[in-house]
Image 1 (cartoon, rainbow, N blue to C red):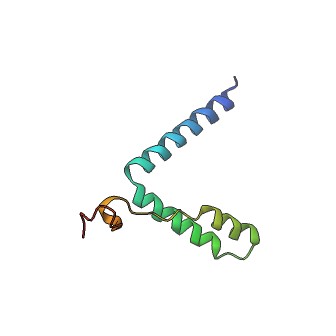
Image 2: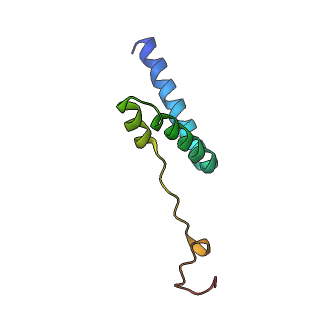
Length: 77
């Protein structure tokens, strides 16, 4: 394997590990950064920027447990 391929493989592995670390320990900050990046691209004129912005749009967080106020167990009412 050439030096360039080894460097790219190590670089990709480090980026992937950092991404997993951020998703596990800083989910709110990562969600906000993704929302800002999505908004930035959605405000641009070219169609490919708007498509990229829509693709980057973060998912809506659905509360679970007692913060959802679901009334199925009636313990949070």
